[in-house]
Length: 296
DNA sequence: CGCCAGGCTAGCG
DNA sequence: CGCTAGCATGGC
Image (cartoon, rainbow, N blue to C red):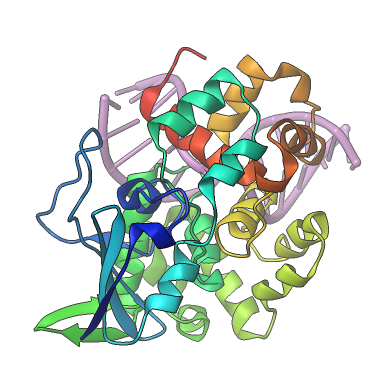
């Protein structure tokens, strides 16, 4: 195992690893067994682990920075996965000073956007429809444990996320056994499309709205899931996924942004949230609303 | 029991 | 086009 540290000085604005990895952005990391995360105390020392591109990787927060261990040299990868080069102070300065947004920044300061590999992200969010975060996590865990490539470390077995080719050849009934419900055929169909060379990463080369439209070619992907993939995998920090929580917030606090259809409402709230990093603001707001449930 | 959860597809008018 | 019934599953 290789290991290393990334000091706090190299992470502009700092990091809250627990908030970053348990806020419903990424479903590829697992908190190591027996290590609890109390949301009202500093999450120092809690390990999170994953398998990515065949490499085992774990990371924890130490002294405001990060400590990692991996079967590969993973520092550069970690910088990408956790967007460590984002300057949170600069991003916050670009965002509006609305009360809701301000409270969210304060409550979860240090939460970063993630940049997941695109296929696992795509499948995760196809599974996310009409589903709560803990159950989405459970589904992705079962997908990996059942169909993912095993990697053995120190006598422990870990699994990567299954390849498109693997999921494409799995019978739908096997996916339903993992409690994917009506999402099972969507997952299979999308895996077939990717295996058949329709590349979700190609969206990254398109302008934002064309990229969203491009991703809806995949079965089970509408505008909301597409926005999640653009935001949490393909680097479109302006994407604002309109889920039930954000729609509720729009109705209560930004009613003039409700323009009826998804595209127009999305454009309006994007403008309201500061365009360039509107997705950052949305991610803070989503996390805040989900845990505080204010009367809106 | 009913309602809801990071919505989407298909099929209607 | 726009509209919405139906869709699996589990927790409260």
